[in-house]
Length: 83
Image (cartoon, rainbow, N blue to C red):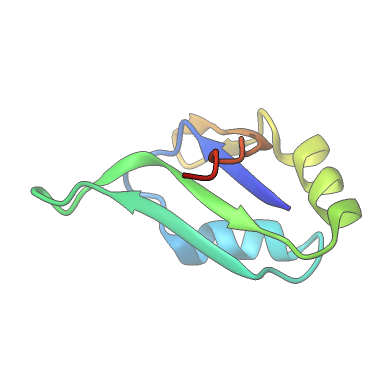
């Protein structure tokens, strides 16, 4: 299940996000979206967890959690429509 993680503090790293979510189960991937011109975080990212039960537990526990200077928002990512 792919999760959208929003409202990330600009200084939050992928490793920090990975550690937070791995407490709920294994991850397939963890990516913070970066601005191509500045190299700075855009304040959101994606985490993929192979087990939907683990992903739902992570959403329930981490949505609204304080990470760095921000309270993150976690939800199931919308699927992109097939082209």
